View 1 (cartoon, rainbow, N blue to C red):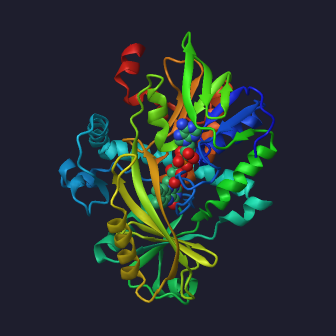
View 2 (tube, helix red, strand yellow):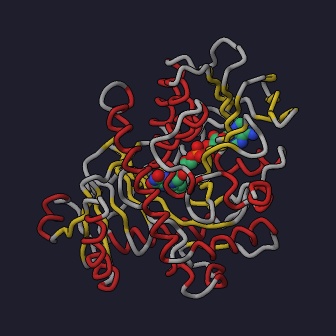
View 3 (tube, protein in one colour):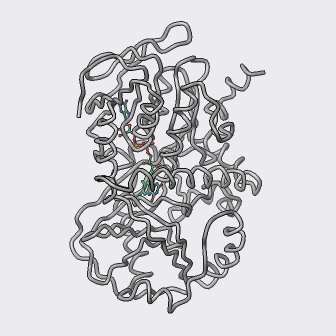
Length: 429
Ligand SMILES: Cc1cc2nc3c(=O)[nH]c(=O)nc-3n(C[C@H](O)[C@H](O)[C@H](O)COP(=O)(O)OP(=O)(O)OC[C@H]3O[C@@H](n4cnc5c(N)ncnc54)[C@H](O)[C@@H]3O)c2cc1C
């Protein structure tokens, strides 16, 4: 994939879905662009490579909601908490949790939801255009999505939320049992009820990421796999040189899009990003004959089920356990138990693959998109958290507009990079 080596106008650090969409849109503004990626494009370290791939209007709620802290911050230390925090003394984590608690209000959650939904809608439009034909078409399926509820309370509360969701632009509706049977004739669910979102769609990964890498390279972007960034040289509030495992670059602008590793990368430049990796797992099995045809969310269990042709993928868990540690066996057993409870007749045969990914999470679940002060030519595109596949296409478009000096056609202020950094706020006063 590597093209002829020249210094690009813009260097993008990170070749996950976010970095690739930044490169795609930057190229469309006429810039010469290079992407440097530590591993191969679509390799297993990238969070974009093994996830459940849901995109579309479902799931735009920020993680920070008032209900999450029903048992206080200490409730997050319980291993069965939907957002589990592995207890440890880590100043960055404690600061992140303080900011997360501050974001757990009705107003902030509603404001965050509006921003995420707008980004998801824009992204879905881009995906429909991009995947209409060519190799990407086989990696994108838009046939709707089922949300299954096992408890009467969960189902009742979901049904109550439908009118507000529809008013907000999410085409949710109650799915009657006969309709569910018609949609999924061979599948036996043990549930109280289900909703349906006709805008539900999903990407098949890592195939989508690899094809996107090829498409971007085809537009003239230089892609450099195995080119880990090892350092930056700065002068006069500018990044003047980026050092990588495959030599140096002197770009006019640099974009940090290194997912969960963006904080580490930015820290070497003195830029603090409020970012925590949230570990999740997927288990991919050979699809049994009675596997769902549509993607399904096992709602109370917070597990997603993605049909991938002759394979079936289950994914879930959200665990703040740092860049290195997590209890994978316990978590994957929990995912399997949830699947067995909702789909008791499903008997997955043969595990094809298990995978662990690190979601780059901000305290308010909004991405960090924009210029990193005090630098004139350093940009950040990260923090897409639990919904990065569904936000990246539009997020890349916004970054490209900002770098081109254009006014983006969406308010980017809620996503500004310095919003959690007290030194940036002091500098602005
Ligand atoms: C179990 C699970 C399920 C998920 N399901 C969904 C879903 O259904 N829908 C959805 O929208 N989102 C989902 N997500 C979230 C989604 O996967 C992420 O938000 C998204 O992949 C983040 O993309 P990214 O490009 O920011 O990060 P990444 O894909 O991690 O890309 C960052 C890249 O930067 C590279 N890098 C790091 N450091 C350096 C360096 N120094 N030099 C060069 N390169 C570097 C890394 O190798 C990596 O490839 C899920 C996540 C998990 C874990």
